[in-house]
Image (cartoon, rainbow, N blue to C red; front, side, top):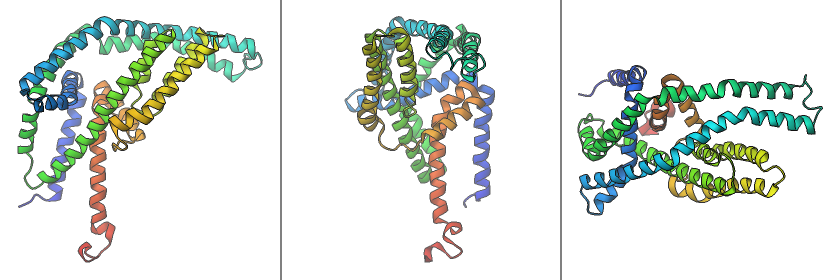
Length: 355
């Protein structure tokens, strides 16, 4: 005999409440495990392809682990120190850039920056804010998220969790499927497949797009000779998952820095603008259609809302789970709308079979 709808809703509500409570109380503890699970999910298709090529699951996991360690060592030795140095330098130089901008505007447009004008007051406020808060924000982020203990925990636990989950991924999926309520198993499998398709398209696809574009922007800007080119490329690539935002933020930042560094060398400033124009063309015409697809079911506004809500409620861990939760809620919402349009509330009082 099937459970009543009210009982099913009660049980699913309890499960959702337990999930939210766990994030609130154990968010900092769950961080390494969520990161490890995310890495395993991201690499599972690679392991599956290696298995189809003839390797066992153990051999495929070992090969991926060795390559991952090599990539991590190269990044840790060659890229990460320079990136951190440039990010710190960029934050420290921002107040000086605003002071230079104020002096430039005062020289060229003296009436615009009268002491009582709103533009003058706004520039002073922004410069003071960056000077007082920029270093504090960076120190707070590094102090909370990258303390010595956190680094050790992440460097030790995350790889171990990722390796074990990657090794047992297919087995865990099979065990989970075996625990599904038999009456609802087909519907749950269908919804889970839709969520996985959305996540695979967005997380894996957009992850590769962000990596490729961030690498392109960083290398191109460094070849031009722009200061903080690596940091600007990293920032632009990091926010590329939101359409146009990565190019807009990175472009404005890069062109602004180029104006101060290359003033008078207009070809260099134009070259920086061309770099971001080419990046947008490559992303829109090649990378996103090939790696993400035309529709992944995650609207940018919906994604921003999920990141904002989960980030404010659960911190950094909330931002990590925001995308999969947003994908799941999107699939469930479409399913609910589909059921609603097949029900009597939408079709009318008569039996839908007699319509």
